[in-house]
Image 1: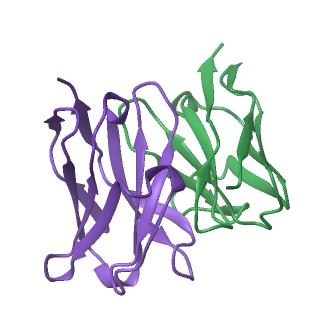
Image 2 (image 1 turned 180 degrees about the vertical axis):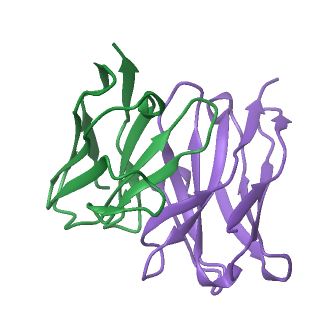
Amino acid sequence: DIQMTQSPSSLSASVGDRVTITCRASQSISSYLNWYQQKPGKAPKLLIYAASSLQSGVPSRFSGSGSGTDFTLTISSLQPEDFATYYCQQSYSTLHTFGQGTKLEIK
Amino acid sequence: QVQLVQSGAEVKKPGASVKVSCKASGYTFTSYDINWVRQATGQGLEWMGWMNPNSGNTGYAQKFQGRVTMTRNTSISTAYMELSSLRSEDTAVYYCARGTGDYEGGGWFDPWGQGTLVTVSS
């Protein structure tokens, strides 16, 4: 199976900060990388698909980049509603796998 | 709007089976895969498998091979996930999610169902 490793596991930041979360695949996955946001008690929500495509309705402060094995999710200016846990997911293999998650907390 | 609505919470004893349903609306059920993902309390997301509602083809994570069965009833646009030989470690919220890819088993997941809590306890 393809392993996905996110860093950091947790992150403290302030409203207005620029934040970057990294996801690394154990083998090349081209651009088959997706990002989700999950708030406590809620289902995950798709933010970015195919590494860099913004899902409809998602604010433009979210962006994704990367290809091959290294990917990033960037939030350009944190808003209060962005404090949540973020997961990457590879869809290169039909045996999908998720990263372990990055919890973004208020500083 | 596209929506997935799951069945309610379940409490099961160790060794039993559970069957969770996921009813789709707002789109053609047979045109998109359904995936199942679970999440234990305080833990991350764990992908379990996918099912193509048109063909009935499935793909399961190795961890669940032999214990999970994904099926569907196209007449009522509903997918099912059955997990057998339950143990306490299977206590989790189980989500269904529509797979949006251009090939069977592929793509990203959107939208997700609301989740179904399955508790395994003696």
